[in-house]
Length: 388
Image 1 (cartoon, rainbow, N blue to C red):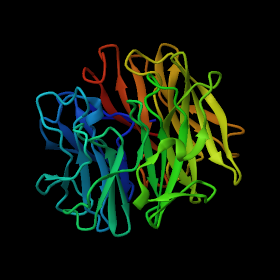
Image 2: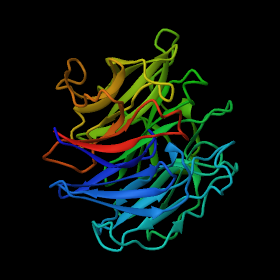
Image 3: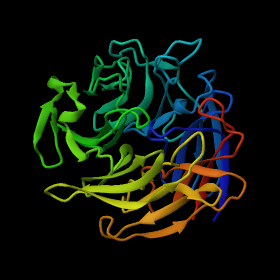
């Protein structure tokens, strides 16, 4: 299985897409170990080209860029510093983006633009999530009030006023993941807060034609009525002492229907679960325990193959280190077939993703590190690509 290092850097769980594809080539990006924003094109034949597009964003693994193609093929890359009550230090929180000059190319770039809208609260921008839906480019992020926030643009310059999508309160910050169908629907999953500080449940909501819906089609509200309280959304899993605290990792669409992978945490021990809506209710099925992890992460993360969500890529502790595995289910999580993809004995492999839009081949990207990584602002990691 060819394994290629793309660059020294990292990414977190919640800024997406981290990798996208066109004609078999992979486009990805990362925040470097010196705090700069890099993008790369890794061709189907294995040729690698890299480009530094912004300096001095800050050394923090939350700062990774998110990538999306415009309908004309030009690449749009969003990036912002990790922002909140403490960060960023010594710099202003801004959501920036750049667009490639040529379609499906990283060679030349236009100027740095800014998303000049946010909600009140003073806590800046974190975790850009870009979704191109027909004539609108939607952007979701954690906004000034620490809640999931959104805006959109039609011309890639002017953004409608930002609004919060969901809120919870109690000093908590809901965590979100999103998936669009490229047409009219955007799906999202949301927690109450961070599992280290709240007894999280996990909720679902779908946007379609200005309405907000549960998986059953029950109307939850509209964009005019946002923000909704996260507890008024469609519950995928409700917290219990026996079940643990939820943490959403990814949502993808299979024949237009949402599939979810998440973890439940009990006493700092995580277990991966797969969830789907069976037409009547949400069903969750255990995949596998995540293992011990490291000091800087509890589980190594999980994501779907968005082109075929029967495949999940996850990282769990095997022996001393976390390794990436492929898990396949032909029957909505009743049974699983698994293959271990990484076997490195010199460090861990975490936060795997597959390039969205990639068909006809198997490629997973992940972050490789070792004991020198102390935390999200002190990491010695590399982004790698594995073909199999």
